[in-house]
Length: 435
Image (cartoon, rainbow, N blue to C red; front, side, top):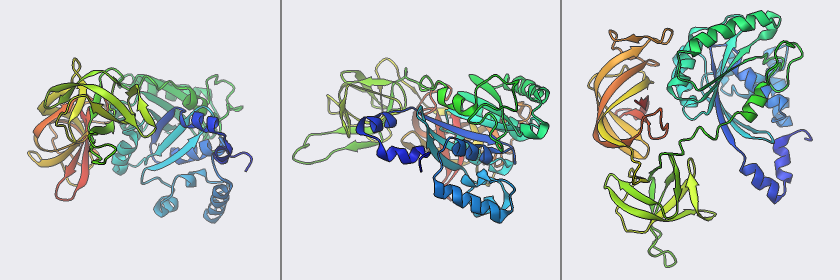
């Protein structure tokens, strides 16, 4: 397999492998309406970047022949469920991994149907970038607006609109400019830092990995070049130091008899050995004695690294507590306003009781008030309709059984988000962004 980059990884020397592992990781999601070509775009991206094994390609070719497709159906690379292949749609979120010499990628291919909006929320919740597809023949549809709003709500920093199927409109610059103008007008209402536009044909590979010869009027980069070079290091909050404790490590061995370490994933900021810190909610202060990892001690660690912190003082801290800097602390409260993406099959119950997971803390809450529901198409607030059904987005207020340590979602996606769980079924029924 001479052209396969994944196969070459096994022949790297130690220095090459270290450099590969230290490459940037970009998580991005695809979204758009039904049949806009999301899965085909990802298949083309993987195929043209030589990130597919030969046996995978042969299986796709055989499957395409069985389905009677004229061309190789690259969408089959991500549509793994039998129902997806039969209907030619995406139902569940499909994750795919690939890498180029510049960057590693995790792709979340999300469904386009309205009833699977909750799956799109799941796939987009950890994304640095959203690729939203628009059919060049149809222009902006309801799902285009819905997914754009969700991308904005989830504070995804970068959105790339791929105006797809340009081959079906004869690669017309006028049609591309018309759709781009409409998208720019709609995107101006959203809170997205970086919005870009690309004319592509996923089926034929135009502007996906290589620049298209069919659109000489387009002078911008291809999609892969954009993904490889977009700046993401500034997307993490490296100012507010937040370390939710996931687990307290006490080996009780002869070698580490007195060791007490607090393990978790840094949710924001930079921690250094010797820093003055406060453990919340107790409020006790100490200094960071060391930052431990499997590979040894570090002088500093930052989001989103997973590490173990040891403190100079013996402080009673447990799962759900948070280590922060003395002069930079999160908000503490039980009365919380949030934007809620409702995923439950049953409507949200006014005054209903639900379980909540926030960082590493488990609490219960009661729904105090449903303030309004958002009209996805117009972005207007509907204060009359308080019936929140599956896939609706609303602003609500809750009261928790114990205080949460949180930041606004717009400031920190890790400490500003929570999920809501139906205790009767144990299903996740809502995803909330704290305002």
